[in-house]
Length: 122
Image (cartoon, rainbow, N blue to C red):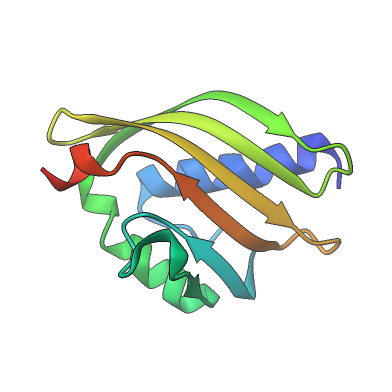
């Protein structure tokens, strides 16, 4: 994978969140997804593409916009982290760091969201 290919995967994710459609994100069928909003928190991952897409179906309505701040690539071009600001329809915002791990076929095998979820909960 090149950095540009990795970037395009992350861009598909952030664009898909606002469009309420993550079909363009090349999730592996057995993707492992960690987020503080999952039942049990980040220590209890959501596993499988359909489960991940189902989780996000409950998130779309809360999002107003996403502003990507920067991209960070690992040395072997198998992962990237993206710093972003999510603006919620409530007017509150979340500063997020998303990690994407991508296999040789260009599929996201792992994703992990890092953020303080309190603005989204209150």
